[in-house]
Image (cartoon, rainbow, N blue to C red):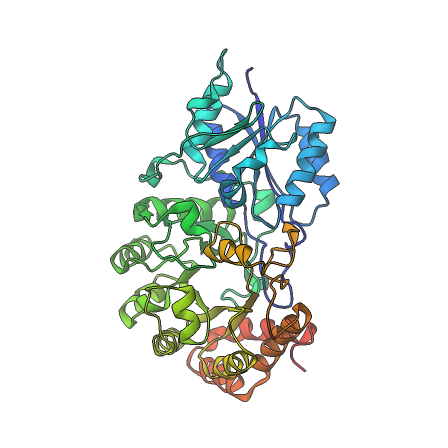
Length: 474
């Protein structure tokens, strides 16, 4: 069967717009843009569809109008129910349209291929598996049993042996991007450039993987412990092309831990400066790999915002959820202050709801948070994501309150806690959030930062307006 058209789908299941607690989902679907590039290299016509603010029916009509022979879905846990629902709708319309699921959730649960609406599942990294799949699919006697990291159903689920990691990321084609998607992409919250000044925000990847084993994260299951990097010249080539094509003025590095290797970060910063790229960018960094030299290089290369995964505000919990990493609150405080002094916007990710933490622990965390040099916080409710260590542990201990995967968003509390009901934990998150922004220390830090770095004024003004409109500030 010769394929002519392939549609690639990412559903955001209602999480496109930023919420009060600053979850931002309005970024491009990088995973399927990479997959789309592979399909295009193999000679297929590709259509990338991101839900954004469309209804399921709108997405369905867009797929059907394209008339694909194959539809591929990028699937996280929270959007698996919506993806399955849409796949069923496609099959009801035309059962001959093939469907294939990939991403974090299918990688953990490839047995979902037993669903009538799912023909194939790709486990872990998808590019080379998808390439081989396309070649095999068009053979007269297609034999799927030899395609590593592929799952399919033939009277029972068949899950083939795993494929090794892609160690040469430069061998992959650059993602294909659609202006109709990119023009809607923004990074919400406190940013430079501010939200109204951003244009066609784009994701770029420098590395894949993370060597650490945080128990709440499903990345170790997907990638193992190895990290592979792209050539910095190739990365900046891509950034330059994107800027020229779309006018992008703000990039998001999608690396799990951007600063794992100081030398490589400085090499990338040198390349950006040497090309005089003149753009801003945002990345996620680890607390324990931050120093003044690194921050100076990043700032001079356009880094205007760094996100840090603090994840816990006491060392007892840090030791449990980040085993062997030897993180301390002293290291956290120093890294945040260094970043803040450099004039870089500091965003932090906090997780609350660990079942062993008491009310006193959470009250202490709330007060500690107010003292840290943070511009913006994202507070997630602990969620046992399939593929993570805590998912397996909590499942055995019967601590998970629901199997409704659409609720696995980190914005709903779905764990049994000895001291808090789900409603109480959610209310406590709101209390932490409001008190953080309403305390005098935050206001004083902001004033001090603006004196030293006045170019951030519009960023703060827009952020304060957002918080006021949401009732966070009075």
